Image (cartoon, rainbow, N blue to C red; front, side):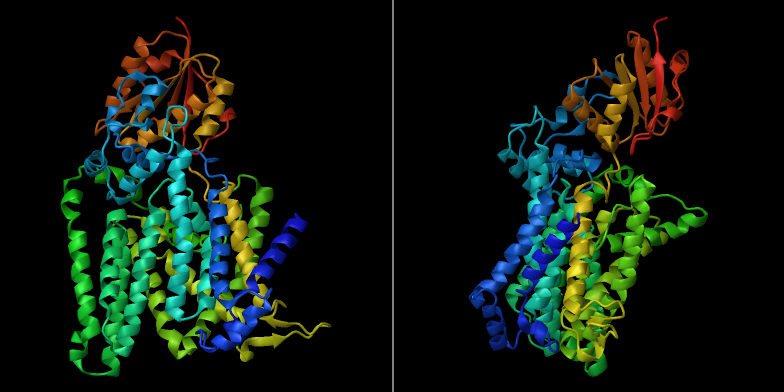
Length: 623
């Protein structure tokens, strides 16, 4: 392990030496000293200057795609991914029979390739049964036609490969955002490097969901916001191509995920701040109707039109309330503090995430200590980097704009959580709406760390007289390397399922059934939406892969407002099945049927818990 760490550190040290020589002149961070940069770049293995930027971007891209493709199918799919798979195939969950015992193949039928399905079927099924816009699902429909079936089912590798590739594409895109915002290739490269290894970015990229595509549109929209900010400052017209690109990014973002509108809300807040700031410097109200603002108003109108298109679809969808029920609910006592810690945890995990979710204390405690030590050391350095950027006139406004996006987004999350009763902090993936802004701010701060101004540097009174940042004896370049390496090993934590762990573990549940039930089994659950169908699909898929259980059956006991409906369905099913068999009640939220009481209750206290599956076991013997 020590050799591995040393090798990784040496590799990164060699790569980081390619970074632009603007690091040698902190203020300004813009690429104005091109002559000195060319001289510095040419000294690195005599590379032509024009090769360095593309080479570095390629390196970050290779690192990012390698992390995102590692163990891509090692973790079982969960309910949301099953929704992506089913709807992207043009299929529907409605084909799965309810209130009767069914075989695994029948339960998994929606996961089979459907040559007769069309894009129209994809859009129709989403509009009537789901709560998401169709853009990503249409792309996935076309994409998954390129991959053969896997054991008769849709290819999980193919389904997850698409978001992984899109997630990797965000690396060069965020480089552009960082470079445009600060006019510095150094900031752009450090931003891209951190995006490549962000554990949060890797987590989203390894799920068959639409969040990586939404992140691309967030990056595009923020890039236009940054450009617009500069034109507002200079009081010059916003180019038409930027306005059209901005409208296009916003329209595609809304067509990918409705929560993209939260990003738009943060941009509105920032633009209001810019208007107020401009009025403070000049009392002429007519400035708000100057050329840059007129183009921005046109962008706002175009974006509103693109968003209003989806209002009828949302209003006609009868399932949206049931599908979002999990983020609604009341709070008692300390539950009111949970959203704060959930939001903080997501922020932390965008940079660093070691195996603190492990069930073993010997892993959790050292991981927690390392993370705590890291943040005690890194946070003051990063905050001081932002503070120094604020002192630079050319960069101050960009820091304020990006910080405004982040603060506004977090404020919106808390407004939804505490005032509207919709706890958006429970879904870490929803933080995609401001994730790129965090990464760019991190890159801007690391650019200061790379070559701090003279007043920041301190000389330790040690035998080596090391020039360092802070009081821990680590100089700027090594600080950047350590922060990047922490991100890298955090990404490894995620791809090994030691961080951002899958909430559902059907693989472990099927192993438990194999070890416990020598007789045929009936796995029964209460059913309200396709979420519960997806829970059982995960189990059925693992059973099909293991191919070791004897004639397993599933029961999806539908439940509307009357919980007894599920009880009656279970009762009727049990009367029809020949004994002996084992009954597994999994996530079964209804009164137990009378027939179940004739079975022998198993002591599940001695059995291990399984994430996502609360179970009770009954042995139903012959009469």
